[in-house]
Image (cartoon, rainbow, N blue to C red):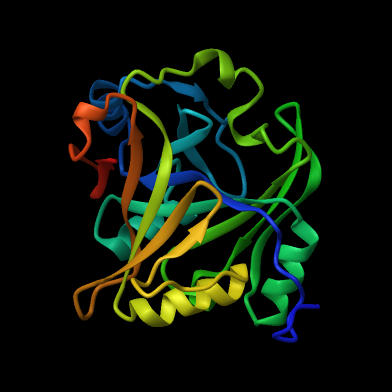
Length: 249
């Protein structure tokens, strides 16, 4: 139990995967491939309960996923309708202790909307909890655990052999836009057991979350991704995929 009276937070937390959602993944994937010289390393077969097409790109040892609804009742279709089109969809944080992550979420009243029990997925042992965005604000967030910290079930087992790091070598930050960014930052700080810095960011292993002001009346969403530039002369370049700005840092 922490000094706050809440269950201890996981010891290690890092940004491992970010998902963008679009009505058609093909043009987005082609743009990503052309700009960043990376390639999809995994695709899932569409099926219940999420009914989606996807492509998972390897960015160093982190991942960028592009999603498309497979049918009208898919959760991603409802998301696109609410957002008025393509947008940043999901933040996936890897934790070193799923039980502690779950206990802390439950203690602060954050509901689990999808529970993937620990088991073997695509040949990798892991588990995850998807959290209700109404309880966190900001963005749909998943807390994921892998038996081997360096593995990643949602990219299968062969991804290390398909990495291309000539342009980018990892995800360094995620930007979450909210009408009440300070409130959302405080909520994430409480959930993750991390301090909110003076600039409103939250430091994680190897990266950080930042929270920015959204226009009044808009919906919270993930609006930006920082990726580490392999070629340091390209730092500062920006690209837009599915209404989400990727900045080379």
